[in-house]
Length: 476
Image (cartoon, rainbow, N blue to C red; front, side, top):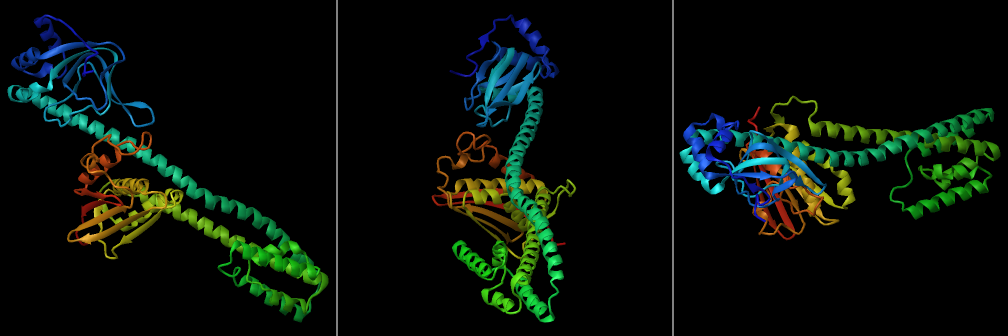
């Protein structure tokens, strides 16, 4: 079905058509001769409500002046069709002068019964020559439309990136946060047990020799964790050995696991048993075990809280929320590291390996940091998608004359030569339906243009490289 086939051509007297065109917001301001030129070369069509005027990727046949009604364009990015732009009485859409648009980026639909005056695209070159004032008006309309689509696309892609970022960040924060909660609860119980053991041990009135022996074991306990490199099976054997020793000496075997997590050895326990026996030995071991366990839990809380702080700091730096919305000198190497932190959950999920290499003396670039980070996020995220499970992604940044060059490479299947020229086109994607919007690389290209940068791609099976070149900031 050709575009506009669902519309009915309206037969109307020339004078009436002229009068209706004169009421259109854009056409009302043009000279009578130009209005007459348009009237002679166009066709008035009527579309019923919900009629599809042009389908996605179908050629756009010409210039559309909406005389009455409501026309909208819908795009399906795999999550259901949604509206990206709309036009009402007195507005213009379709192919505009100097526009490079050839096919519809989505489904153009008459939301309600509409009447549209269409001028075929074959007349546009002549219109540019014969109707200079109308052309000037339409160029302004085209610029406004470009800004609208750019703003809408950027917003949609930001929201999609934000969703993925939030999901990954929630996953990354959940582990250390859960560890803090778990360790804090165990720490409370451990401190109560240690206090009880300490109180009972104080009543045992140990001799100086016994206290020295106990201090020696406690020092060994606090000196470090269990020997490094033990497998789960070897650690279980260690717990069993200590548990057996405790039972043989009439002590509470429930503390075996806590002691096994420290540097305490069987010979150290033997030395303590030479000075302490019976209940004093049992109380001493409980006091040492619970005290060392409390120290270990406190260290776990510190490490987990530090991990949370690291993630929050990375998010803050990644989004540049504390910076003014003006171009500033940006540390590209740090921003790449922050981006990888944001994507750490995805890296783990895909069992991928990521290597980051940054020149030590990499110059800064003048940029809107939050926007530049969206470039890195899109490119690295795409590379992880392209790499097979267990694949490898390399990210590098180096100085090259007066520029900074960032490369993102993956070992995926590559991009076929037949579609390589189209990958920066809006709404074009190589991902399955529902997994890609077709906007990421288009937005990357736009954002880099805003920063006087450029992007290039080279691809072959097993090796795809996106190269971004940005002007370096002047020294100082």
